[in-house]
Length: 89
Image (cartoon, rainbow, N blue to C red; front, side, top):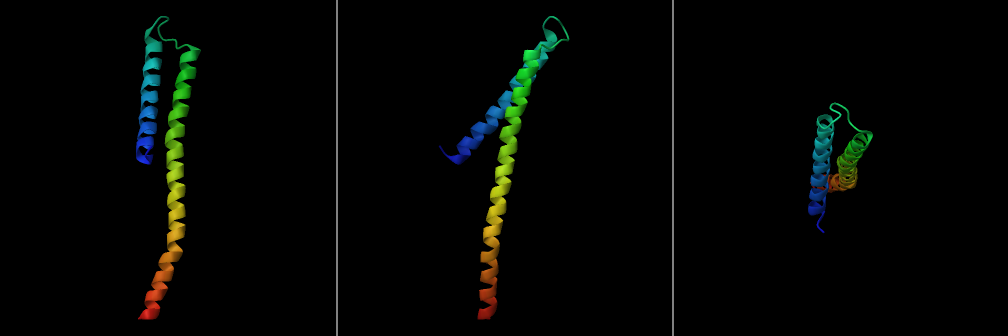
């Protein structure tokens, strides 16, 4: 499975979980007894938030770490190239 396809699936499932959880909470306000949301609905909504937060949070964390590693690996190489160019001139 391609990385881009996998990330797309993760993002879409997180969005769907947020929408489903929100709709379930809204439905909890509408059905009798009106205005009261059952504990199981709140538990499910909490799980939806945790799932979505983990998908978005892990994605941002990993992307940031990968970019830091790339920067660290490229900086010495770029500095060496610049030093070589100065010596050649």
